[in-house]
Length: 206
Image 1: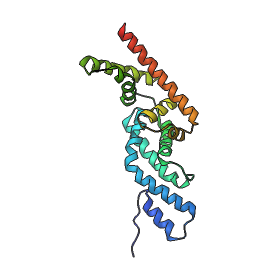
Image 2: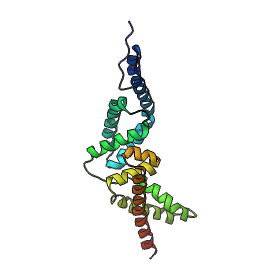
Image 3: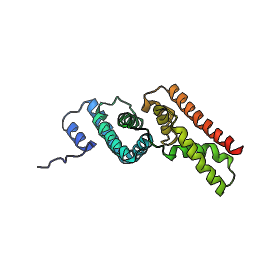
Image 4: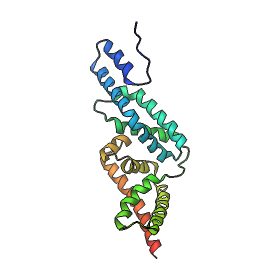
């Protein structure tokens, strides 16, 4: 007699079990959610790891937090309300894991600083030169220090926007905020970083 393989928290065994009988609408939706999450895992896991590494400032801790994120996601996906979008929901789970796992803010990674500096500085630079490259590296250092001034939530929202490319609406879903709050928090975060960069520029020109 054939025996269904016992899989990790993926959809196959769940769907087979659900459809051996007469599944309810909720069971069908849960099976589809599991199937979608399983399909997203390989693509989404590196993004979640990067998000957690930026928040936690520790690669090893981010790896543990990523694993915990997906353990929780697979455990809870059956109970998702209909229409829930998986990607922002998983980032919301990751954010909650990071809040629990954070031992210290630690060092800030350069990815977010690069995104801001590229947006704010590159339009003013007509040609690449050793002097421009040096100024870029100095600007990155300045912006990285400015990131430490942001609250955890504000930094998380900015990371989701600039590094992960989520829409404001998706960030609202991930953070559990209103759309208006997302816009305000990201605007204020940008203002802090821009002010720091402007101060660096004016200091460099004097």
